[in-house]
Amino acid sequence: MSYHFKLAQNTHEIAAYFALRHSIFVEEQELFQNNDLDEIDQYAYPIVALNSDTDQVVGVVRIYEVEPLVWYGGRLGTHQDYRKGWQIGKGLIEKAVTTANTWGCTQFLANVQLQNVRFFQRLHWKSLDEMMICDRLHHLMEADLNFYPPSHEPFNRITYTNINYNQLPTKT
Image (cartoon, rainbow, N blue to C red):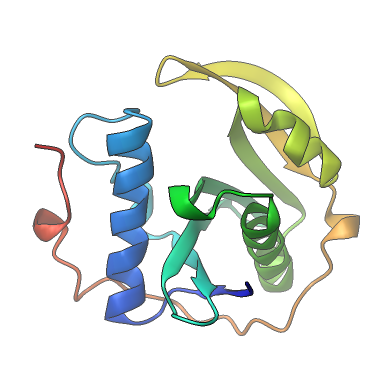
């Protein structure tokens, strides 16, 4: 099975991106009560992993700039039916970091759940600190940008003007 990784740009991709996040972080992991939306979603860039045969969104991550040249990745997740191996997670991380590096990045960070720290370390990330987020241990981690060269992703500000946040899934 093959996958491709891209910025979510159409209504279907963006809705599927938010639905998968809801499934992972609200329903499965129960990190959030009703939904996992926050103020960062107003300016973050959503990235999706698509099954190349069906165009189903099978993985998600978002990237956002917190100050000039400093980017974060977050809400990394893979559909539960596609978690064999690390191909999707690795592809999403590569797409996230290389995209930010293309757009201007001197530091790329992420708050990583404890069970994923070793995976990130194998992908040339280092742990900077430990912290509790949503009652779970996380590591603040930094990517070694030497292993994530700039891509050819054009800078294109995505807007969510057509997304009604009140109509996104909520836990019942």
